[in-house]
Image (cartoon, rainbow, N blue to C red):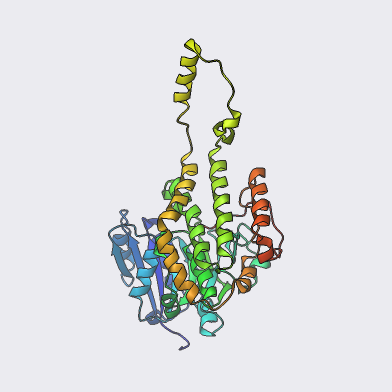
Length: 398
């Protein structure tokens, strides 16, 4: 591979016109030969004038117009296919700006043969705090950004090293490796496609490295805020379960899946504030029968047949139903991945960092997690987490 190979920066966009100028201006200033750097802008059916603005202000950018929102995964995969003459792909969120050295620093470990994929250091837009400084994951598939919210000068977040997955909003990868590994899973649509992909890379024998010298700045969750919260939550509940279905080895997947489903149902109950006791027959009180009183009791029961449940809670249960709908496709993908496995679970588990962190702080949820950990022997397969389990709720990926 030449010292300065052809690099394509793939940027998915959905109604992000207001992000274009700072993002593109920063890319124009990167320290990399312009003739060997392509920018592929994949638009997912924007209606805010994004394409017109981009073409008028930055005509050298290659634009792919999609007539609808295909999701983050499909947009990135399409951009990768359009960059078939490039050695390296960089995926970048539209709400990012980068340092001039960003490209060179991010692709360096790939050129040196130290990794197939590299992850950038993502800071808040003002550069004061950390957004992403490596990854971590709970055993049930919910990933998070290490160092999120820490001071940007933190020594820990300035330390390079292996990480389970790169944030899909600022990562580089050899194009041939990306294609050979299957790209981002388009059934995910958005969210956790990067966690799934990074884990898959390790399973297939590749390495992912966190490179803190590759610095960019992020408007956190800028696109996500434009969608109803329950639609984002559905993806954030469903996709971690799909991730564990695909990537755990045969000896562990069944127990982890059962534990993950039990915990997901509990989170749905808790977020909705659902009164579980009101459904229990043993809580039913004896009442006199006959006459007007019985008529009133029956009328009250008819009124109680429907209860109000927040949409976020319902989203959790729809997400679990989605897992069932997608199960045949996901199991087919699982078979392909497991057939090509080159690295066992035990070699990958340390990259989870703290597999037993508690997602929800509630006492009932914590007790359930401890119970499933014991019953399904999860601590036996992971060993004690290096940093110790936590009852805090670290920032989930976005």
